[in-house]
Length: 427
Ligand code: 5CA
Ligand code: ZN
Image (cartoon, rainbow, N blue to C red; front, side):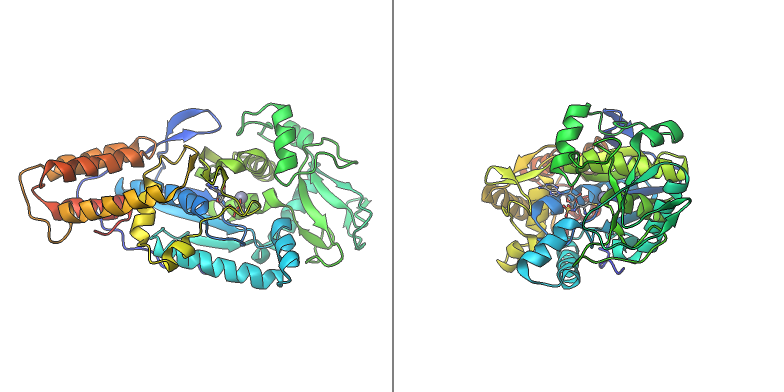
């Protein structure tokens, strides 16, 4: 699928070191040092109610990571999915009387235009789930053949019988067998999330799982393939007519585009469990290798006291701010003003502060800035040092604020170039 226009990223003299990132799996800072090319997967949107500032903050964090890798001299291979068929999207389409495909297409278009306006680096591979359903079904069949999947009968599916070995699916849903995968694959439940079972059960119920469903071997076993239901989209497949479960989509797309054991798997902290634990489990079961080396998660942006979320409807949309005439650079600076791993709450004060910052930086480093005595090279190195240390964007912004407040630098254009390359803000 088409992504969006890539921003110009100037090449700077000198270079960053490889970045250090907090890894959710090992709960430690680790050096995200790729061999030649960094391979990054970030979970993409479920296309409705896009693009709110929580989404934007998450994609901006991984944009910053890529800018540091590029500045450190690495190539970057970046893949992202679009969950363009899943329960919440279908529910929204039904509730609003809009065709689900029309809803998804319009929201992906809006997301693209927001990402482009914010100067976010696009993925090299932007993959819609509906474009890889055959590959996902083949992966489900592979898990079945390997003894890591089982059927759960349904009472409301439209029976389409496929034969899996000696078993007739007879309109059954197909689940991942966590216990079998733990025996057969290099993976253990909780490897990424480090959560205990009671927390897992609670989160599974909140985040698309079905721990209460009868007939499952383990309440936490996630759905791999949902058999066809009346009024729902479906695809004929070797595992029966139906549609993909959620976690398997990201495993299949990531393995297809990036291969195994890629550099960083990313997304918001709401995806740590079950989504990233399970996608890593599926990928290990399919490939015999770990999914990724580092599991990186962004904090949640709240608004009016709660996590900004489509289901609550407490949203500030990037497109809304843009339509109100807000400079996209100020939105970017407002988001960069928070560390990517902290949970924080958006208020208009963040935007006002960002607008003031942008003006001060333009005065100090923009085309009309007059050179002075302070050493620009020191400012650029301090900027790099902040970002290398777990993407400390508040630290990077403080470096620029201090330099702007202290009086003129000797080469304002070189600082402006670094702000453009590393923070994606053209002064
Ligand atoms: N399609 C799935 C991932 S496969 C999904 O979670 N889609 S989403 O549209 O709900 O979210 C898209 C991305 O934004 C995810 O990485 C998610 O973790 C992140 N995200 C969602 N809400 C927030 C928020 N309030 N703050 C920060 N990040 C968020
Ligand atoms: Zn995902």
